Amino acid sequence: MVNAFRGNVSDLWCAPGGGVHLGQSLHENLIREVHEETGLSVAVGEPVLVNEFHAPEHGFHQVDLYFRCAITGGVLDDTWRDPEGVVTKRRFFSRAEMASIRFKPDTLPEAAWGGAMLYDPLELLVR
Image 1 (cartoon, rainbow, N blue to C red):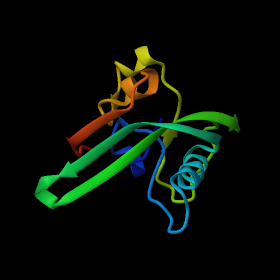
Image 2 (image 1 turned 90 degrees about the vertical axis):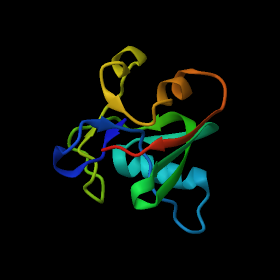
Image 3 (image 1 turned 45 degrees about the vertical axis):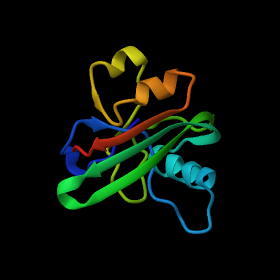
Image 4 (image 1 turned 180 degrees about the vertical axis):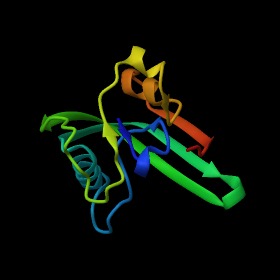
């Protein structure tokens, strides 16, 4: 998971990810984003979650797709810097540890350790 808030302004953790590049598949974009934000290389598996974030007061609506992945190379390193300088921390959490942190989306543990594809509609955006 990553904390992607410049200047440590939030304690919120999320899965690595980001926007898509035109002409690249979802898998290609995910492989790129995970590497940029963590330094890890991954093989992308099946989708596990579709999550919608929104901020009705700002007219913001984002759809996120989450995939099961396997690490194929690299290690988490505190000296790694993503090209955009947004990610301030990166680390792995056990399911038990996730109970003691703030993270989004709310259904992430169920998606990570569950078996069925999930759909989580219209979760409010938080920082």
